[in-house]
Image (cartoon, rainbow, N blue to C red; front, side, top):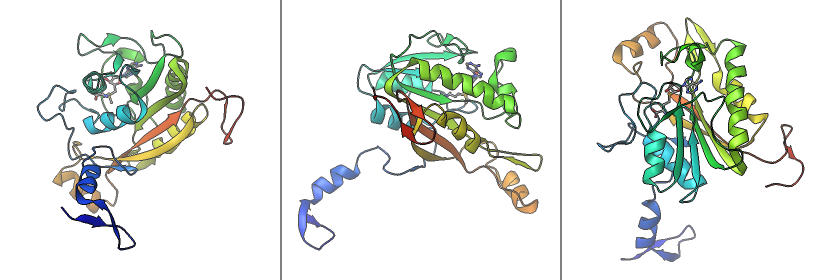
Length: 258
Ligand SMILES: C[S@@+](CC[C@H](N)C(=O)[O-])C[C@H]1O[C@@H](n2cnc3c(N)ncnc32)[C@H](O)[C@@H]1O
């Protein structure tokens, strides 16, 4: 096969090598667009679960930020996508939820995880975004608190404190959240959560996760959005941040990095 031309017109890299590079399933940019949840009939979470995390999102995080044998924590496991993907990739996983839906998910409040301090390589949180989905779990459920209220961010901060405690130095926190538009009011939940998290973690990057399979992605809602001049949520935020020993939110790291 002929070598592929490089930018200056010469040919140094063989076409097979270019093709092999292109075959990686790691997302190269900050826009991750998975057409569906991605289980493809495998037991990787439950595509029917309301608020399920895309498989491709978890694969990218686990492969980028952990090695085989590392421990991953999902304190809000839902249908268990993180648990299934992480195990398939040869990592260890601690999976909790206030309402465990499977036997391999233990009951715990994300604000108080039964995990030792400083041992986790990656924490993945796909939290409730507001009070729009009923998850059960009584008063402890963070999906009962509207994102319009300061209490939402105070309680999410307690989850962030717990993530910070269990992460090892240089460990990574990945947090999925969406904005809300409800009763003619826009709440920039993503920006507010970024602010909460950046008090404790050094931001690595922000990824846009394109939304496809929401219940609002229907011709009826699309018609209403045009007719009444509002926008449907087209993406979620994925914040990727690192635990550093002494993080100063003004952007300086003081002390030794772990
Ligand atoms: C968006 S869903 C997670 C989806 C999951 N990643 C999946 O792929 O199926 C949010 C989860 O947070 C859980 N949750 C809400 N409040 C919680 C709390 N205080 N502690 C632990 N889990 C909580 C809910 O029960 C729900 O399963």
